Image (tube, rainbow, N blue to C red; front, side):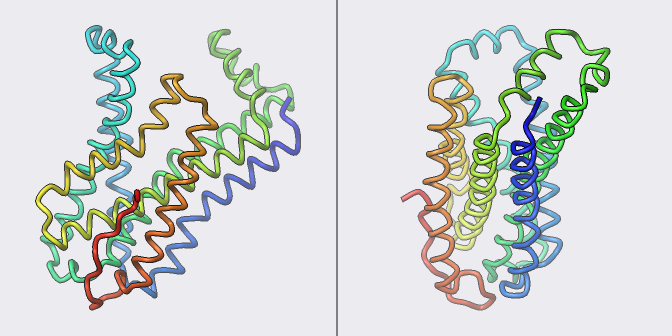
Length: 274
């Protein structure tokens, strides 16, 4: 049984995350002059490189006895978990931004392009990894409250059904709050990564891709440490809350300095993790 207060909190949290990229798109598009195609490109890149390429990589690694043995080592598990998303997503982001520049070189003069791309990339993550998954749990909770969950999953093995009940039993308003922190921070990080990579490409920085992979891996490190049961979830989310606020401040300073307006002078590269 999931309490009404928990269901209300989960619903509000889901709506907040769902609305975040949509609201930012309509509020920032007129101001910074990015195009709809840049947002769509960000959505497509996340959907392909994260949901298809990265999952295919996980499937290969977890189906190979040798690599599974390696992952039994917590240090290897953490390193793999931190690097996998960074390599897949940043490679996709790099290819997409290079394509944008090749297609329309004048686009490079508008840092607002990176904001549009970031809203698409981060918004796709917010919806595909956050909103849709959370909606699923809300539906399961409603079914459980109506005593219809077991009937709905009649063909599911009993141990899997028991795990489902255990997860539903762990849902709480606190879980909803942590969900908002995790997903909002992830969205902010995607904006930050997009702006930082675009600025590096504007400055023709030679090591853009490896540096972005390393930065992404560092951001994913707390989540990997939690999955390896090295640190508790609360500690990981506390790190994301702090660094998320730092990135928000860096982005605000960058765009207030004129970094996002077409024709503005190029500011220095924002240092998101200082």
